[in-house]
Length: 313
Image 1 (cartoon, rainbow, N blue to C red):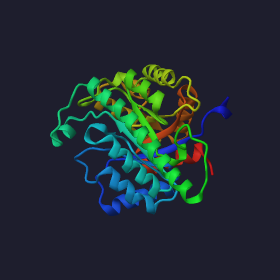
Image 2: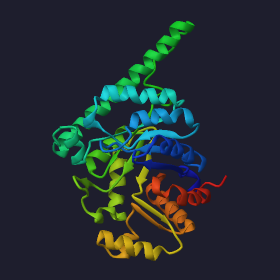
Image 3: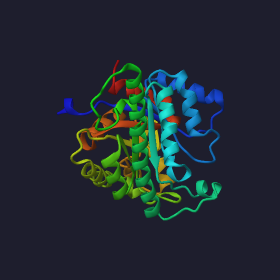
Image 4: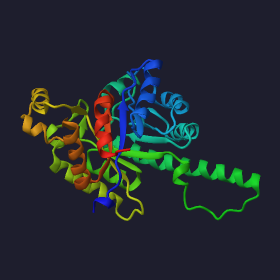
């Protein structure tokens, strides 16, 4: 059974408050430590904008997948957004990941002078944007192939869709049923997080394993019938590799207002020795199928020994 489980992949997520030197250093360090992907968030207060930052990372990296985590759909035209993702994909040698979201942070809407519409309205716009992005991906891939055929004189059999390697991987996610069902239907990568409100997590109780059981079931229901199921990812909000996990858990408990034993069960938090964290991730992969592990930039160095345990070279 273990042999049938997907292999682990590891990603770093960064908020773009970096200088140029700091950003380039992070790109190189992520790759040298063995991470598979570098994702960036998208908020208007950030010093760097995600698309130009990822484009600049392309020529100084060789293996890192470069992705958005996630672009606020309400701030962009989806057809233009798809074209920009295709540009990063081309410049990086087919390493781009386009992560899309419905938007949630009030400050982004205030700074963009846009209304923060109800969640159902933003969801419908996201669903429409996914259709547009996939159409643009298919159209641009077909146009590129047609151009090659005209140059070479080849007559190809019509394709049923774009070559997966020729377009960016699509990442969707969230915490609620309709969004995770959509992600299961459409995405290459599905990220599961606790439900978020305007100020962040609605209730930390939503971080418990029993809720994740339900969320994964929604994704699997959406993905039913797909030839290739999506990769499952759970974003870690905090990761601490420590020989004194109780002390860290007590500190987190004070911040979150939950007992340390409850915090230890919350899926967005990972606390323990390198060996303990490796075992926790193995258990989560067996239970839920989480093979992509995304950790915050602050933990990039301390988490590296966990990668070495789970994926020895």
